Length: 187
Image (cartoon, rainbow, N blue to C red):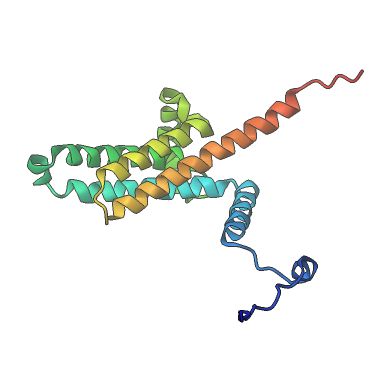
């Protein structure tokens, strides 16, 4: 005689399952957070300046701490040179992103002349795509020259993220400008 195994109860019909409330998945939550962040950036573009300027300041401070290790000149010359570049690139970022809404009037007035000179000699920094690529480059350089568990890794990831945000904003702006420039012809 054959025994019949216990069968588990049948799953609920699809219609019944569709009516149950579903929690959003992690990916959906991440997409909602990204959309919320994008809306915030579009409503307050000075936040991008502030985030980039904060990244520049972090680069300068991290680079200065690396330069204080003068014995690294003999042991790890390339990392010492990278720290010098970090200080320079961070200062360029800090000056480039100076904005009257993010800085006290005295600081902005002090940085305004340097910013004007920088924009004259580095035209790429006047556009979001240029700054985005520059920040992405900075972030990747910092990541590559930092040890695994260091502050430099976080600063590098932050700068790379800021660079990507600037590039995405440039692409969004250029797409909206493309549609505005077309002459509509109706048959």
